[in-house]
Image: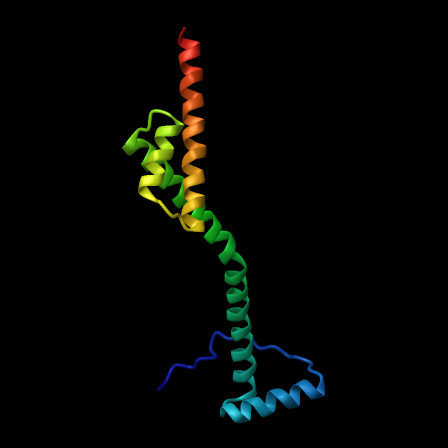
Amino acid sequence: MAADKTADAIKLNLRLPPALHKRLRQQAKRNNVSLNTEIVNQLEGSEVAMVRRMADALKPVLNEALEFAVDNTVAQNLIEKFKPHDEADLEALLQRAIPAPTEREAKVMDEVRRQFRELSAARKSGKARAK
């Protein structure tokens, strides 16, 4: 004997406008399911749609955060690996590495410059305090 799928289901009396009831009955008939199953399927589908809308709304924010993290990491790695002595040395390095940067690469290069300036300022400030 098959297990009863509705054994743990909650019964609900529901008032629907006649036009909505008729539309749901027609959809249930087209889908060859009961009216109850049609309503449950549509409600579950609305949850999926809501999750998709939320994911679509979050995607640009997540992409921006990911780009920032990647730019930051790339910048740190370049500075640590090549150890430029000053901004001119850094510019020469960047020009050799990326002679014709795309818009995205230019953003990364700007981040490298920003981090290098911060690092240089921190080094100078540390040397000034040591004296």
